[in-house]
Image (cartoon, rainbow, N blue to C red; front, side):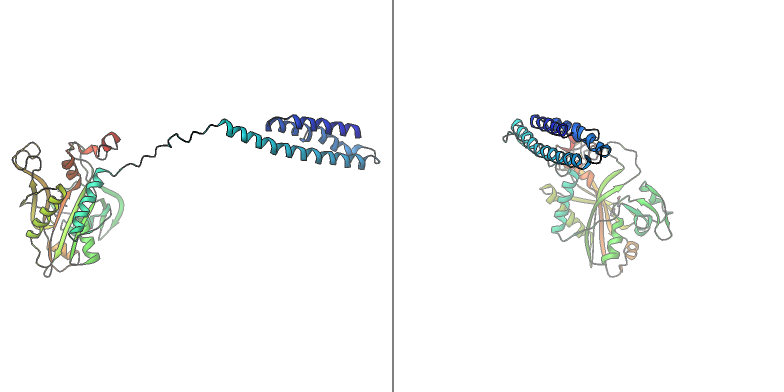
Length: 346
Ligand code: PHE
C-alpha cells in the first residue's frame, strides 16, 4: 500500500512538472484528486483496511494529498504567469494608432437660433421662462380670454389628453402656443415684467412642407407703466436687426387674437430681396412674422394684475419658421425628422 501511494505521488508530481497549460494541470488534478480520482479512491478505501493499517495508510495518504495539492498550486501560479507573459508578447500594441473616434455632435439648428434669441432679449433685460407642454385648458384658453364657446378656439386645432378633469382648469391639452406662460408668469411674479418664453408647441395639423404637429414658438411680453406699441416696434426692430446682423424694418397691421386688444400682425422687410419683391416674400417685400398686440385686460386680471395701473404688449412668433427662413429650409419636416445628413449641415 505504501509503495502504491508513493508511486502514485511520483507519477502525479511528474505529470505536474510536465504540464504545459492550465488546462492540462486541471486534468491532472481531476485524475488524482477529483471525486473519482486515484488518490481519492485510496482515501475512501482506508475505512475498509485492517485496523492496524488504518492509521498508517490514512496518515500517509493525507500527506501525499497535501504534497500534491501544494505542487498543483505552485505550478498553477507559474503557468498563469507564463501565459500572461506570452499574451503580452503576442499582443503587439501600437501606440501610434489613433484612439476610437468619439464624435461630440453639435447643437441643433433650432436650439442654435433659440440661444441667439435668448441672448438678444436677455441683453434688453428680458427674463426667460418655461412652462408645461402638457397644459390645462384654463391656461391655454380661458385665462387668455378664449372661453369654451368662443369661435376663436377653432383657430388652434388642439390635442386633448384623456382623463384629468378639473373644474377650474378643465381638460388637459398639449399647449397650442406659448401664450399660457403669460398668465402663469403674472401669477408668479406680478408686474412689472419683461419675459420671453421659448418652447415646444403642438397642433392637430395635417403634416405637409409648412405644417407639423410639433413646432417651436417664442412668446414675448412686457408689462409696466405707460407701455405702448411704440415700445413693441422698437424692441422688435432691435431684436431682428441683431439677429440678422443688418437693419430690419418692421411693419404692423391689424390682426385678431382674443388675448390682445388691439391685435396686430407683424411683418418684417424681406431679407432676401431687401424689400424689392421676390419668391420668398411672394413679391410683397414683406415677410409675415408674428401675432402681437396690447395684452387684453381680462388676461391681466387672470394673472392678478390691475389693468388700471399696468399695461403691456405681447407677441408670439414661430421659432421653427424663423430657422427655416434663416437657413432657406423649404420643408418643416426636415427639422425634427432625425436625418443626420440634413442636421449635420448646420
Ligand atoms: N399665441 C398666438 C399664436 O400662437 C400668437 C400671439 C402671441 C398673438 C401673443 C398675440 C400675442 O398664434
